[in-house]
Length: 164
Image (tube, rainbow, N blue to C red):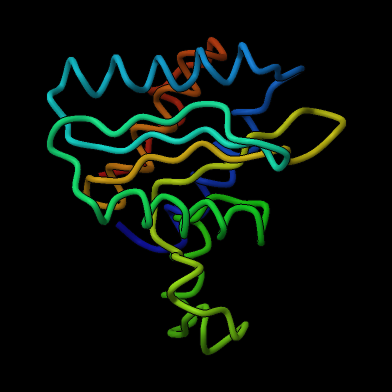
C-alpha cells in the first residue's frame, strides 16, 4: 500500500459516498447496518453516528474496550475539523512525516488522525456529521465504514475498496 494510492482511493470514496438527503432515520439505518455487520462478524467495536448538531446512533458491542469511545470521539473530531476522513488526514500527515500536534497544534487527547471516521456529506450542503467505527486496526475501521456507506447508498463496493 502506498500513501498516494490510498489517498486517491479515499478521495474517490469521499466523492462517491455522498447523500442526496440525510435524516435522523438515515443515521439510524446507517448505524444499524454497521451494528448488524459487526455482530455478524463478531467484532468488538464502538459505532457512532453524529451530526454537528447531535448524536444520532451509538453502540458499544461485546469485545469493545473502555478506550474505544474516546478513540471514536477523537477520530470524529478530526473529521469535524478537516471535513474529510480521519484516515485520509492520517495518511497525509504520515506522508509529510508530521502529526496533528506538530502541524496544527491540535492536542492528541482531543484529535486522532487514525482511520475509522468518515464525513457524512449531503450534496449541495457539505459535511453535516461523521460516522465512526473504533475497535479494529485503523484501515479495517475505515473499510467497514466505507462498506456500510456503499451498501446504504447502492454503490459498488468493489469499485471503492482500498488496494491490498
